[in-house]
Image (cartoon, rainbow, N blue to C red; front, side, top):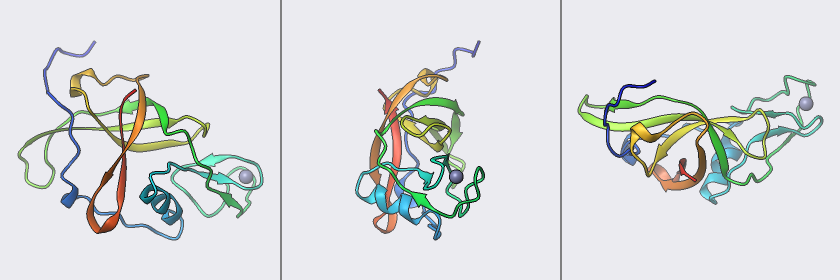
Length: 146
Ligand SMILES: [Zn+2]
């Protein structure tokens, strides 16, 4: 049982603090995000989902990949409540989460939850995606309570 600490609203870190470093393997995910489309890396041979994306399927060694459009919903698998801005140490409440993605069995996305108080986030909570523009034209997927 968690202590009854009141953290207040869960926010995103300020957009100017966030930088996306896309690689050849992650670029399709981030390009889809610019179109507000959630995707995950799926093996084009056996259908196995893997996140983060890697060049080779760990199940069948295929290099074939698909990037299907997912529903944009999921379930909180794990989370942490952070109460300091890592850039300057000032009080700032944000909640990194690991989300089990609907439509992509086995694929989990590390993201953030907003739109509720940090103390109200719990494992098993249903969430839905939201898109937040950040630096350099990138769009960040984050989640709020469904
Ligand atoms: Zn495979």
